[in-house]
Amino acid sequence: MPDAAEVSLIKKCQEGREDAFRELMEKYQRRVYWIAYNMLSNYDTAREIAQEAFIRVFRNIGRFDVKKNFYTWLYQITVNLCIDRMRKLSHGKTVDIDGIGGLADPTPTRDPAASGEQTETRARVHVALDRLPPKYKAVLTLRDIQGFSCEEISEIVGCTNATVRWRLHRARKLFRAIWEGKGVEIGDDSDVGF
Amino acid sequence: MGCEEVRDLLALYAGGESYDREREAVEAHVAVCAACARELDHFREARANLALLRDGPVPPATFKTLWSNVRVDLFPQKAANRAVWFDAALRYAAVTMVGIAVGVLIHYADRRDATVVATSAPAMAPLAPAQPATLGSPNAPRLFLRKPRASMPVAEFDGNYYLPRVESMPAGAAKDF
Image 1 (cartoon, rainbow over the protein chains, first blue to last red):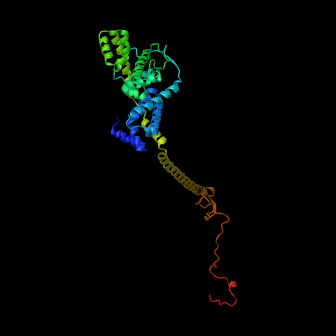
Image 2: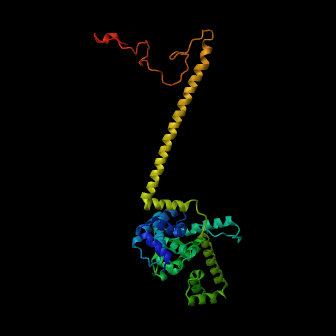
Image 3: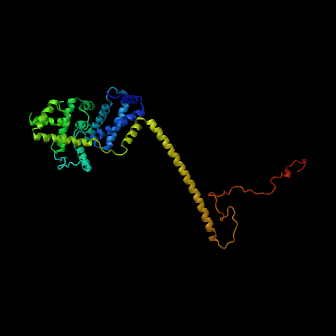
């Protein structure tokens, strides 16, 4: 249930108030940007997606029911835009990771102070994440990176809790296989059994 | 539960999404099975690596640009008004600067011409007798860029401007002046 201050802000936005929309945007822009960046791995594209998401939100905010969660609606728009963009970019191609070396460091060091190593790991995680089909990438981003609950994710991606759990299960297995360089063919973007 | 069944549950267990019954089964199994415990560690490590992407450096001015772009799209009139004022101010400033620059150029061109004439005239004719500088003579210092026009009437004073002409007086009129 949204808090009273946010409801008031949304109502002002529905009246077309620029200052209210700016306040609302400042509250959520960082999260929207990071969801887009984690899914697309590109700063400029992430900014474009965030911009498009906020524009769509404002244009449709008149039809938004204030009893519902604003953030799930906003993140739903963001994730859908990201999935559309990813599909356009990949154009439905099948990625076969046989022959691609594992992304996991063969001799990992556990020094948290080594920021250079962390940057490198981050880059390798992005590469592994980029090889996942869009819907698996979406749930993994929302759950393991952004920390949303399964209920919130099911609202954001518009499917049941069971489907979210299934996708998470598949996504983690695929991610691990890519990370460890195991031969896995990622071409099936469908939810088997759901 | 065997290893095969437990391994199928590990992906969700690592993220804390397992149901209670599944969680209990996994915990009981990994307590005694080192291979499955290692497998669980791999899933946990993968999650920890993903969590590294949670936050990081953002290019400067990202959010400022984001707002300005959204604003231009959603509230074009206000943004345009500000742009028009700014544009007009820039135009006025540019015109003023060009005017000042032209004025300064004219000023310095005049001064340079006058300096050249003043310094070169004695060197060219050192033995010639000094002539009075009159308007129009080559020795006169130029004060203006524009030369006096040839067709301009020259005022001549003959001393009779304020006297009425006698021939224009009527015949019988008294000449009392």
